Image (cartoon, rainbow, N blue to C red):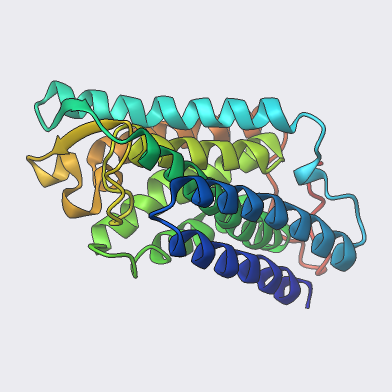
Length: 275
């Protein structure tokens, strides 16, 4: 039942917060405030429900060191998407025409923060963590990555390729970030940095959603394998490539730190997780 209660708690906050932020999309400052409230409430609810259902300290969301971990993760996400855009610009698929909408970027700041926090709490904090406990790191990574990609199929302009790309470059990478650090702050930061850079800075489509209202006035066009087409640069082969490389780097770090979890023993006892 702990899985059920944890999923219900996170999904409830995600649904209420997400709808609230979307309802005020035309009011950037209000969107920022509601997004911030959603992130704080989601973290508090996750910590409460996990502590109540698992009777343990919620070390994966330890406030100590949260700010530098979020900062590192955000920097990684922004740099990673910046590398994708740099490659697109070099090949002529991405062009900047001038300054975009600073107020639009403010609104996206709250929206992207709420999305990053709630999705990481659900997919890595609940699903990946509990599947890993019984099936080990590798199976948990593969299963939750595919589920994360499939969750993007209902998005506008979503494609099967786009969902697969998300599964590989984001689902796998973010789970690997959690395994390497054993905290949720880093994957939350990476997720936020990537999404905000895509929509709030470079003004590109994010996962098939029209979020082209960031700091730069830009257009993306050309070969769909490179640009991702209507799904946005997350469907680009550049994104998949950089996502795979970062996933491998995180998994290498996890191996060095002894953070990889083997499959559950036949006796039925869950594997001991690194803390």
